Length: 274
Length: 131
Image: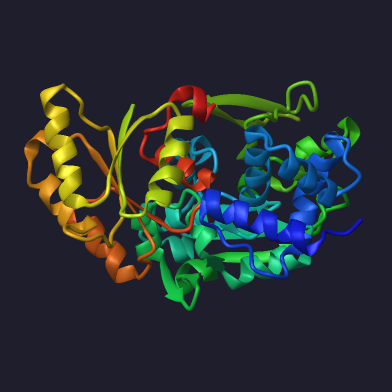
């Protein structure tokens, strides 16, 4: 059953009332996609039925879930700050000391989505290293061509830049372009975006000094996780650093990694001789 | 944690206030900068001082930027974190607000998650919420 105009209108008004966010006409697909899991969970035949149920039997918990489902999808900048704090405080100084000044540091943002992680790293590097633009290259990969193109464009909506990007960094590294914000050309040139399926043999990339592979492994079964970690390790320098998502670990998955506690989080390094 | 939400729109005060309350904040409200200074003054008598002020820019009587200047001029409120929450989204305005002493800047409209991200950046998100 497709979403009726009345249901869409009700949801539109609810979301606007509760969050001030405007769902433009034409976003029916978004309402369908985001509310379908909730509809199924509550045993409704479809999204319109869910909306009718909540309309006829107001329930604050359910209305809140509807609003949240429709307003939470933008990727954060500095998402889970720990891997970035650890990067600037521990990882980067060690790498700079260990590498020749003319050696380019290579960083990989695997599963880059629309590029927030890659550009967060670029911003941190440009603040920390005077010659970041020539000293570092960042590879951003994603399975989705659309996401790769978005990363290449380096343009973000107002809602996207609102997600955890410090205002000082927004004004320093972005310029307004119509309704969007565009990353500075210097930072955009530091990032090379390309398509890559982590679950298949990887293209020739790297060797990487740092890999951000966050919130990816959670989607795969154990053998695939193992295969991905093996392939990633083969693209890393022996003294490289791997950052996983807060809920992910190599422990019990692949013994060829050593866990290093860094502040409130942790990173993984290829085990010597592995 | 305590917050003062300053906005001439009652609906917006309710939206921001509700999110902050969900994060465990005790919230007071003011409809413009002048009223907000009064709330601070009244709070002083009872030992109530906000950790955070969420400040709209365009308001009658005293606008958000004037409020930021007024608060920053008073050393008593040095510890209070000031965040603009406004539709004003030009780079020049953000720079102006930060130069005046605002710590952060959130552009309307925003999601609960966006506010939460900003609070996390500012170290103003209670541990149980940030977990």
